[in-house]
Structure formats: structure tokens, C-alpha cells
Length: 396
Image 1 (cartoon, helix red, strand yellow):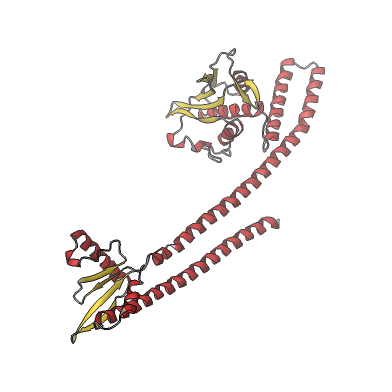
Image 2 (cartoon, helix red, strand yellow):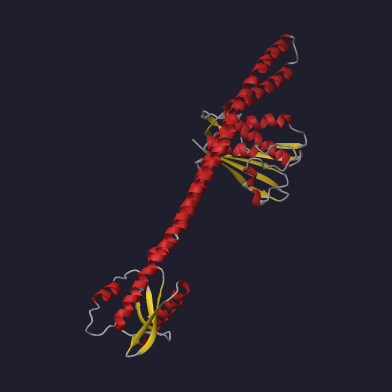
């Protein structure tokens, strides 16, 4: 009893650990980002000092160090303006037209520089560089924006969150699939146990049938009882096959379909007209499991009866399609199915009845598509004029 609780606790521990790890990484990333941004600011302050010395130095003064500092900036985009806001210099942008002044540039390039300047003003505070020349003091402003490395670092947390989301989704799907597998295993075990339990009274019933024969009971009555016992035995075999791969053998689909169809027709309400619209001597073959295939036909017939509320017409037709498939068409004269529900009706739990589990068509779909590699779908359905279901199997 404690095992599910332990698994649930382990799941939450893993999720909590993942969030703590991500939170720590994001926190460290933010610290690193701020530190890196501060280092870029310090580099630009050094560059501003070198720019000031370079601009105010006499001709006989060695400014090679200042020049080297300015040229060492290869990754931080920058624009220098005067105190009137006019652009004087620029570096590390998408184009390097340093041979021309700003006023001499084509209009498109001037607009580009103006747009870049506007972005820089909104991103970082400018570095103010007072310059004195011939006793006159004027001010230049160095604007800059974050380097490509710093910009890419901003997206790192987003990438990390996406990775975490993907990781979390994978964990969720793994846990969910394990849970579903456990549930399927439990249901399969219950089904096999049910089949085993049914087997004991079935043996007794067969004995009673022999006693009835010895007592000279009406033979037709005995035959009908035998049919019902055979039916119970078929149900038991179906349950025993749940959870295991069924064995498929080659059969004439016309014969197998009519056998299941006739059993239901003989026991249904007289208000329902049953029509088998295929000649009995028609021969089309496919690989099927007899017990599971008869389950499919019975489920389709039962759904057709429910759709007609116990009164109407049911038709079944078996035919070869394109020489590759065997097509089984089950038609009723019920109220029809809205087009937006064509796929939903095959989902487990979907039902329009007050009673029922909504497993009939979902089970039918699984038997046909998973076990027989076939296809089942709504062929057509008209509001108030009935529905035709189609089953496709590979013809051999």
C-alpha cells in the first residue's frame, strides 16, 4: 500500500530538485550577467579616458598606448557624439565606413547610425568626455550597447527553461506511461482471472446439457442452450486474450461475419430488420483472430441497435476493395453522428448512453488497428438517416 505513495513522493522530490537546480543556475547566470556587464562598463570607462588623452594630447606626445586601448575594442558597438548630438565616430557596427564623415554618408547609412544611437541611449548611460582644446572646453559623449556575447548570454536562461520544460515533459510522459502500463497489467490480470472463473461453471453447464439429452428434452431447446454456452465460452476466451498478442489465422471474412451477425439477429428484438447484403458463397480472406473479430462485429451491431433505440434496420456488407482490402460495412437507420464526433466516438469513456462505460468502440478500434493492423472509421453519417461504419482488413 505504501508503494504508490513512495513513487508519488519520489516524483515530487525529482520535480522539486529540478526546480531548485534551475533556480540556482538562473541566479548564478544573473550574477554572472551583471558582473560581465559591469566589466564591459569598466572597459568603456578606460576607453573613454584613452579617448580623452588621445584627443587632447600635443603632437609631440606619444599616444601609442591610448591608440592601442581604443583599437583593442573589437566587440562592443559604440558611437561618439559631440555636445550638440551630432555623430562623430562609430565602431563595431554592421558597417565600417570610417573613410567618410557622418554628413558624407548615404541617407540609408545615416538612418542606420541614428537608429543605433537611439538604441544605445536606451540601453546604457553615456560616458561623458570633457575635452579642452586651445582653452576651449567641449564635451563628447560615448554611447555603447552590450556586446554580442552579453546579448547571447541574456537568452541563456530562456534556453535553460525550455530545456527544463522538455525534461519535465519527458519525465511526465515516462511516469504517465508507467502508470498506464501498470493499469493495463492490472486490467489484463482481472480479465484473465474472470475468464478462469467463468470456465468452472461452463464445465458444469456442459454436463447439464448432456443430462438434458439423456432426459429426452426437446432437441431444439438443447441446441439453443448449447449455443449460449458456446457464446459464454467465446466470451471467456476473449477475456483470456486481453493483455497478450492474439494468434491470427486465415479465414473467410464472409463466413465469420455472418456467423456473428446471425447469432445477434436471432436474439434481438423483432422490431429490428437484419440484412446481410453479401452472397454466402462469396470468398474473401484475411488474417484474423476469430474470437476477437466476432467481438468487433458484435460491438458494431450493438452500437447500431442502441443508435436506433431498438427499432430500425441494420445491414452488413462484406466486399473486396481494390483487391488489397476486405471491407466490412455496418449500416443502421439511426439518428446519425455529427461530423465533429467522427473520431471522438472511438475515445475510451465516450458514450451518449446513461448506462455504459463507453468502451465498446474504443475496444473495437484497438482490436482492429493494434491486433489486426486494419482500420476502422465512420464511412458516412447523415443526420436522421443513419450511420455506416467501415472496417478494413488486409486481404490475402
